[in-house]
Amino acid sequence: MRLLIMGPPGAGKGTQAKGIAEHYDIPAISTGDIFRGISKADAETATPLAKQVKEIMNSGGYVSDEITNQIVAERLGEPDAAGGFLLDGYPRTAGQVEALDAMLAEEGTQLDAVVSIEADQDELVERLLKRAEIEGRADDNEETIRKRQEVYAEQTADLLKVYGDRGLLVSVDGLGEIDEVAQRIFAALDARLSR
Ligand code: AMP
Image (cartoon, rainbow, N blue to C red; front, side):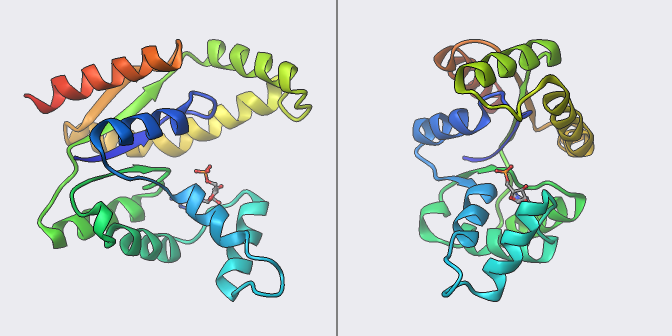
């Protein structure tokens, strides 16, 4: 089972990724988690790569395709990913789509599906505002939340189109309880894969 997962900020993508990975017994590989791990190295032991990644992450930008593709290729080359994987947060650019295609072609494998978690923007904003209130997160005001949703939509529109054109897209309504959404994802994936 080789899967990708995409979804707007606040739609519970990370949580669902873990559930899907467990369900199909495949590793969930998040490039965001990998980069956070790399950048965590303390100042004395930090490699040039760690310093660079930290700077980029703090600025809110993207790590270069060159570094990102290299890191994903290495991770997918590990034994636990040989039978399948769920990639979360990758690919994010056209160059990364191409690189992933090449990695899979080299192994003679291909993606089985791309899960897209969808959520109505207004409901998502409302949900995030409620969470911000409960958790006291002052930076989560309506404007910044909407801005993040816009950035996501802009960045992923092309990717969703690419995978949609390939017939790989499995779109699932992401609003509801965690378990409810998980069941929706499994049902949609089972339907897609039994075709
Ligand atoms: P995320 O947790 O997926 O939002 O990722 C956190 C940060 O890691 C992003 O803001 C980027 O700086 C970096 N990152 C994660 N995935 C990628 C990727 N596929 N390409 C480039 N940068 C990435």
